[in-house]
Image 1 (cartoon, one colour):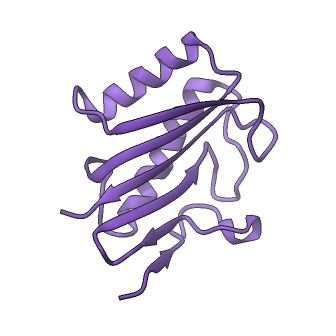
Image 2 (cartoon, one colour):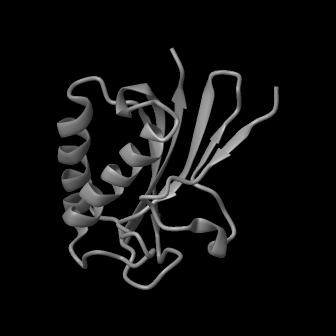
Length: 131
């Protein structure tokens, strides 16, 4: 069985940037491309780090819903934080705890100098597993 690509209509069209939002492998693993605090046109929605984390996770939720999954199916996160510091780590930790409680998925955080678009402070990609 081949993989299936999905680009939810409520998220921006990522193909102009050279990627798709979701790849369902058909083997139980689903890969979600980096989600950032974007609106339906791909523009960054806020300059506030906490708001960007919140919107990025909301976009991740939307991407997963398009393939009939939710955040409880996430087994791995990779997060990218511009000018990472312990204050931003605490903010991220709070948002992750709000979603996953005391059972968060695995996560790798990478501090970066910049991300793809001006104003992006945070990005998250994910691997989800079908039950």
